[in-house]
Image (tube, rainbow, N blue to C red; front, side, top):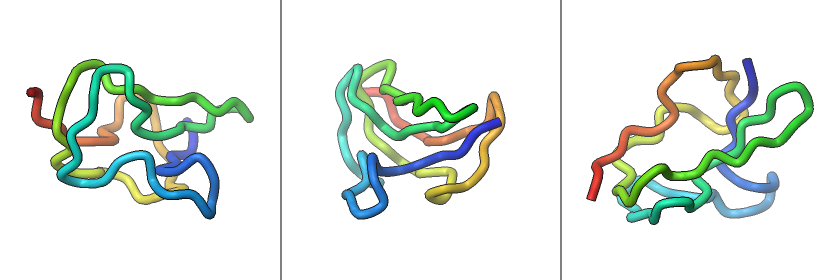
Length: 71
């Protein structure tokens, strides 16, 4: 269990937006778990189709965070 964050700080721009092309290794979001901030990176080059969670929403292991289209 953790908390999903779209940006590195409350006043910062989100890491990614719908429609954006991201490269392998690019940070997509942060998941805070047990006071640790874990950067979630793209595993491959892709296009963001949908962001499945709202900012600061709780998430659990295995839940969908993004829908992507591999490029």
